[in-house]
Length: 74
Image (cartoon, rainbow, N blue to C red; front, side, top):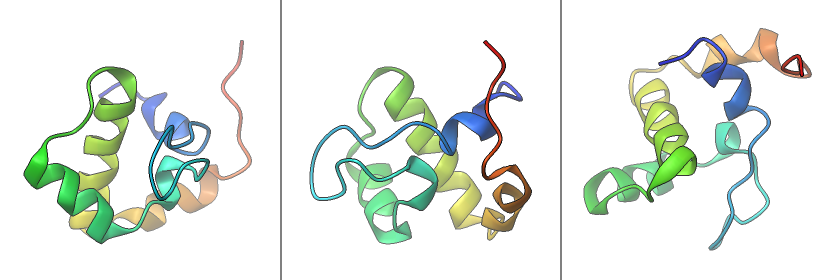
């Protein structure tokens, strides 16, 4: 995991499906659990979804609270 990945969870949106347009950090746990069982999509989206699943599964979602509103430097 790259330290910037936590910020990306708060900036990248779901690209398809029922939660299209929702931030990855805001995806429901049961949705992430389904992907964990069935397989995450390839690429950055899948990598970030897998990270969010681990954070949610371990009850660490509050780690993201102080980062909300923060942007990655360009």
